[in-house]
Image (cartoon, rainbow over all chains, first blue to last red; front, side, top):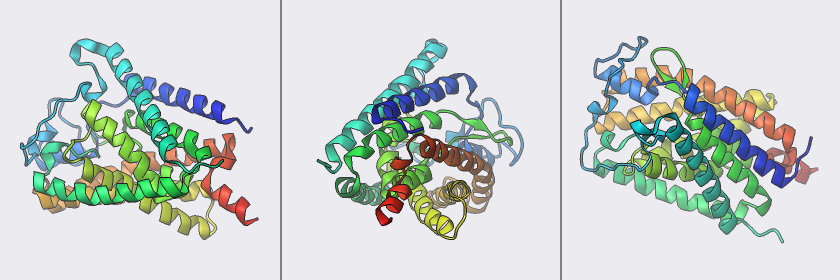
Length: 113
Length: 214
């Protein structure tokens, strides 16, 4: 089953969008490995036990020299954006990364012909 | 494994950024000399796919979740560790600037952990294992798991130097969680390579090399 470049591009993008859409509804809300470690070293969590609902992994931070508020924090449009906002954020991210990677590699890649 | 701004003192972030910029320059040089135009769809699809799947946290028990990082995947598919640096840098720039996932001052260290370590461990260990005759998908899965665990160990050392995590508890927890998260990395990496090998075998770097040698 060999497919053309265009089919590969569109097929790949569709798969990415499906994964992103599923992620909005199915992704685990548990902290990731780094955040869990931050909770563990603060004594808020045992090594293999559950994570606290309201734990703050970043409380372990050592630097407050720089703060930045992203336009779509945590892949959402804020509390009021709900699931629709999250879907918009993830889809926008996928399209931006896809476009950026396409344009960047187009500008840099070796011209074959 | 995205390190936020608060986890590193600024001067340490700056050092990691300088090292990362050197690697990014080498990745751009790789793209200019080695990345042919017919690979552009693959780079775009891998970047979008890695971004999407990084948003999909899967539970690994122990109150913890994790997702694919994708450095080993990019390096194996495109046949160079610099491909991972190139793609993960693009993904991390968008994640940091637009979504606040990973800091901006700490973007350098995140590029090193996920792009550089992921890419170099993935690429060279894959060459070793598949060169030793191990099946392509088994090799890819094992090296992706290893890349995840080594990146986690690197992150815990960085956190210990910063004074964010104490050394031993940090290593134990990061190691434990990423031994589990690495299984996700391994399975998805092997599956993604299988899909590409089925849809477009000509796009896989090792197939190109084999054809050229034949």
